[in-house]
Length: 235
Image (cartoon, rainbow, N blue to C red; front, side, top):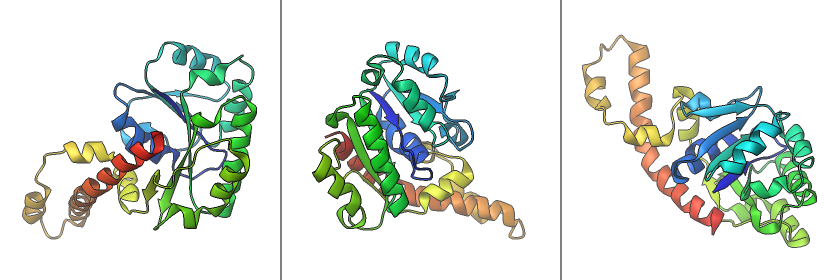
């Protein structure tokens, strides 16, 4: 499975989608960040090949031989990426799915629709353009009315309301500690014992251990929710 995580809008959760949702559930996937300025999965400790948008030729060659890849296209490079996509005949076909994370702000929804239009114009068919609703409070249908209205109007993409990542402080904690959920769940250290044994005046260590304990407590239920989101996204 070869997936591109794209959106003309910034700060919609592309790195969250790549690092926490997709990478653990796409076995053997090479992670390629098309990014020059913003955070990528590399900042969370994952092995990442970093490119810029204008280096599409190198990316295209990688995709020709890759069985599994996740291409995280940063907002600063998305326009170059889309322009280069149109230069290579049928280049869009080398990517199985285009995943568009989106948050509920009006600006993000409008720019997501522009991204859908650009992908459709490049020849990407409806079945391969999938929406991932990010930072959902309760129900995606209530919070992303513009996206669902456009899906009904255009029939150029798929929007499953169950393909959602619920609002959670865990992602900010993970970013602060430069960790993935997968790494947290694999960590066998006894941080509660370490906290009990820590000098009560060592506030930095107390904060670090408290964050790690909170992360572990939050990670399991969030990971189960991400399992459900992944199934909904590709069903």
